[in-house]
Length: 114
Length: 234
Image (tube, rainbow over all chains, first blue to last red; front, side, top):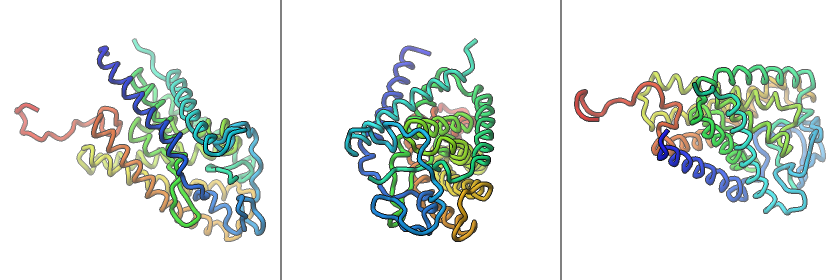
């Protein structure tokens, strides 16, 4: 590939990553906090309080168990930071981590040149 | 603080069923790697990583569909349109694994369930629609964008029924309204969510196709229809 081609490709990559980082880091702040379709369907039949915990009724969501791992970044937050900064940094970190993991997986999987 | 659980948590579907779908997901993932090899050269590797990163980002952007209910992009259709079905399925799989292990979004034991619905089923259904569209429509950026949008909608609805099937096989708790009610609720909500998925997918594909059609997998293959009579300069 020509040097020019490589430069264009790198520019595209950085541009795409920038868009992803802005989406995850900034736009995520205005994302809806309502339960998504799966959550809503699983909670059908139960009454839920403001914190999202089940207070009455029977529904499939009652069977949910705490997460096996949890961790400092659980639920797209950073332990110790408020929801605003926490979600933004978790989003940025997640985008970079996913990019790195994806790149690694695909690099291992690719066909070798020659 | 409200928890942002977007994918199936652990405990919802029982152990044996979760394990069975984990094995299915691993086997399918292996097959995708084999088939993806043909497409994966050094040029596509970083782009595929970018698609995965982009899907991660957009999955964080819940949009309201009904009062008190939101939806978010699943991403298999977008991945299929941009990097093809094999690489696409792997992209979404990477996202789901990172989400489960690092962000507690989706149970670890539920990874197979989530991968099956969102990375395999969603991508496969979407790709089928794209293949069909390629036979019926001219392979232009606009047509591919529209096809990707429709693919995104249908794939989202089907993916929701994938969960219904999993629940039928191994749901831990009895359903108040029966399986039919779950299917109807999941299907109905995801028909709405699918509209968002379709619009985001179509819009993203259109944007990429307009500037870099060489980066849209769904535009590969047959050359774009000629706009000038054969023999004149392109």
